[in-house]
Image 1 (spheres, one colour):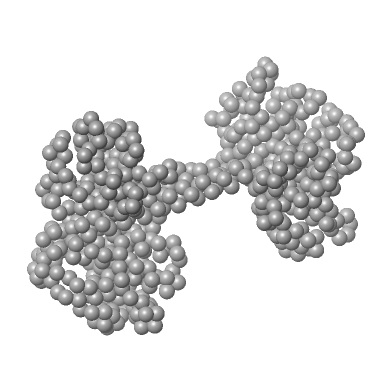
Image 2 (cartoon, one colour; image 1 turned 60 degrees about the horizontal axis):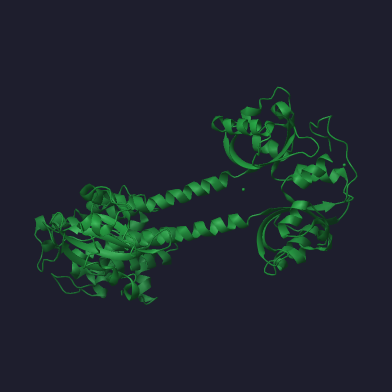
Length: 589
């Protein structure tokens, strides 16, 4: 292998403690997935490995050219950090070995990288560094931050006052804009002082109604505020905050003018030996049986052994029992030329018995014939695994809080029209079952279910006496009812749900022949989710009691969608729905 830009001043190879040829050191460095470089005084590169070339987009001969501008690789905002480190190193001040910067590639792209540096032994003016691309990790962190903000943006978009407080300290953890418009800034204040002007907890505090044996149940109550003298209907519930603690959430609906309103919420030789031993990468060479032939210092440190102890180890002794069968299967398969993963994760076990999570990149070693062993590069990903688990846990909490918010919005509608209590939930359940039977993806089904449980949200703008009228509605009254898909859409359109919830609600009264409302859409212009919701809504409504009529029965409901299959309702949706009731014995609950 031809040597790439190696300084003629490189120190001569000293006698190796382990009988490893220089060629192996060179191979190890030039095949690692992390970038490796040596930089001399005047910020001139002496060496970069192929991984560094790929990362930066330059060839080694370009980077190591004496006229190459070192700082062209560094983002302008990060260059001051590099200059400060250089000054500190010259003046003898301590310089942290690890730091993160943004790398500029030849193509002008920006990559977030983690850099580890060490001064080469015997030459305090030359620095060895490794560079790892952590762009994916940075993007994941930014996504998680966005998801956390998403929950709060839902709260902020609701026009009714909402706040969250700690049940033990009464500290306000969150207050939305609607509440801030009334009481000013309330975060970090004590709720009974900020909202009621009291010096002690309110005697009507609802904590006892939403925690303990009532955990997860909503508590709806009315009161008159002592400060502004207005009447409110409050919907209180315990929810799990992103911190993990169960907290109190309240949505307050102003009932002064209309006491039947509701709630909204839920709420990353010596020259090559130095590179191998100090690059910060765990490197292993083993034989056909998995016995270790060479392990560098970093590998030994990773597992808690002294370097000399590694000669007595094998794959079986450092891989956790849970994963040893799989790892040995990959090892044997690789030696036999089978198609097995070259890069994968596994759980290891340290000398003291504690687990360690690792990512490994493995290639077979050959000596002019069959494979004689493998070469592996390992990275400790324990912290990453922990972060991923924490991120997944947070995402579960956020999704649970989002689900709670949607359920709270559903209760808002039902609080105004008790006669249809459970209608949205039953429609959502039937729609979800139809979608599952049709083979729609789980993510789309979740979006459909979310839309289903709040599909009548727009009815909050319909007078309560019309919703509960025991007789047939007049033409003008029915025209008020018909605006509810548009109202629901207007309320939800600016909320960044993971699914098109607002559009599904907007279209759930559209029909295949264009006779529906409010847009008069037809055919495939109507979302599939909305077509499913439309059929489910009709079946549930017709088979349920209403103030102005008794139940028409399930048989008539199914007859309605069957008769109008392809006219008003999607044929595939209707056939699936009919099959659920006739063959799967589905029952509306």
